[in-house]
Length: 113
Length: 122
Image (cartoon, rainbow over all chains, first blue to last red; front, top):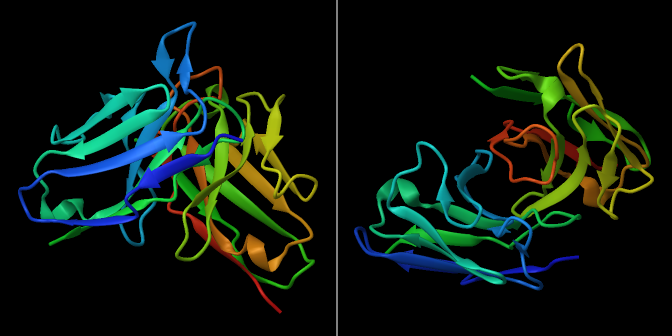
């Protein structure tokens, strides 16, 4: 199984400041035949289902604000919120869809400092 | 618009069975692989099972293999999860989730239902 390790477990950021979440996979998620990383980020607010933010490691889902960006390749990935807004308070999960069983990171809780 | 609505959750005793349903609308259900993902109270996300668009392929997490069965009814746009021999550790919110592309099911999830809570307790 591919293990997804997120860091930090939680972080508190001031409004308007940058938030950075990291995720490391136990094996490469880069599929050589199409040069795509089978990796996504989700946001989950209390009482709600997860919401897709980023897929293919860096493609923003339609309707997601451009302050959210994804980067990385292979085994190391980053989600950046460039200017934290109050509505961004949530838990963020990374996810690999390279191989079964599909797996998720443990989550990073983002709060306002 | 795409809608996924789960139902069938509830409180069940250990060792008993429960069947979850997911009603899909707003897209051509028969063209997309579908997944079940669960989340124990206060915990992270755990993938449970997947079924191909035509029902010919099914895969399960080791934690539920042999106890859970995923199925679908494309004529009625319904996804199911039959859960047998339930254990306390199966207590979770169960979400159905859709992949964004037809054909393969090895993709991220672009839509999730609101979830249905299953509580396994005596």
